[in-house]
Image 1: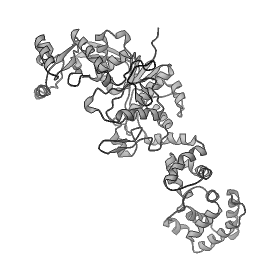
Image 2 (image 1 turned 135 degrees about the horizontal axis):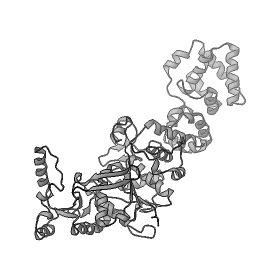
Image 3 (image 1 turned 180 degrees about the horizontal axis):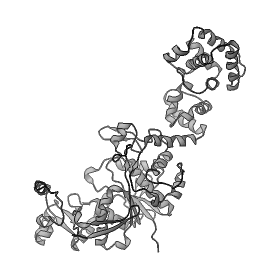
Image 4 (image 1 turned 45 degrees about the horizontal axis):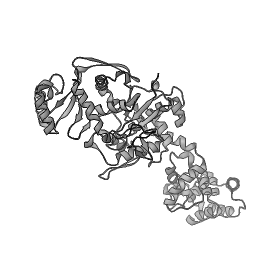
Length: 512
């Protein structure tokens, strides 16, 4: 009988959620949805030294903004702490599960798969210095464990006394010597590693009575019946240890399938994409804005004006190829199309210009009314009060040039407010000695129009210019300068029709 698909996204609350983490969550979500499975959120906060206040809430809010909804582990924006029919494995925060892990760590000790280690940090540093003096790396493994301060080298009574009288000890997994660990990754295929290259990792710490990631994630994945683990490439070196842990517990038949996702790379492809790259090149690497305890502010895609659907669409294609020319996907389409077989092994270069392109494509799918309703709060924040009908008409004129709604005022602010300054270079180029008289005459004719529409203006202006032998470029650019303040924007007739007769005549007359 096939196992029910259960996947988990298990971030650590050590800071804001990187866009690479969002992609990991997204791929887990898509994988589960396609198989009618369950997507679980679990907070892995066993690293008490690196815990950052607010990071857990940030993670949950980020996933909600993206539309990635866990089916288990979160309720009403909070990590579930008490079991229920929908959340049977609560609590889903590992620090609240701390009582679970010690018995599993001690099981490994009792059965010869782990041992107690009492080495102080100073003693380990001394061993490290000696090894480096000999030109060798220091690794806590089968070669040196016999010389170090652990339960493998002392009487049981002495070890028990140290365990009882101090919390300055850990439990380390005992890596077998010279074993070929054979593994399988759903993206990378068969993998083999010799165990002699591995170190005896700490799996439980007496100081805070918490497990390390290695023990906690294996135990919780087993207890929560996780069928597939889809996580970042940085955990690939830990895979042999995790295989050995499943073997030590006798859980080989219940071991999940593993898939390790490649890194998101800098725009030049040289190294992992980091916050510093975003700061340097001017793009966000976090889904939402993040304010550190020191007051440092990091950009967020939401605050920069991205649609969550565009952000998710862009992320999905950073490392996954649908096998077709299609680039624009709804979340529902992604759920239907996604497969790990088409996830690439190599790193995916992030292109900030492509990210903007995705947002522009989603902006273009929205109606003028939708865009107007999104733009109006921005206008009101600038003290501009326009009807929704006016803003709809303005949006129609500028939408093709915008990638973001919050750019629309920068692109077409002259549609909402008369310009306060005028481009001198445009004036010097197009304003001639007779321009004053020409514009005055045009203003008079515009004022006499009964119907002040784009069509009537387009009929009037070219006819006047042709009949009087004026220079078309000089006249039209001078009119645009008076209306806009510079040489940009849609057609002059479009601008006049939107502004209306009174505003048009006022703008022209003001500068004349």
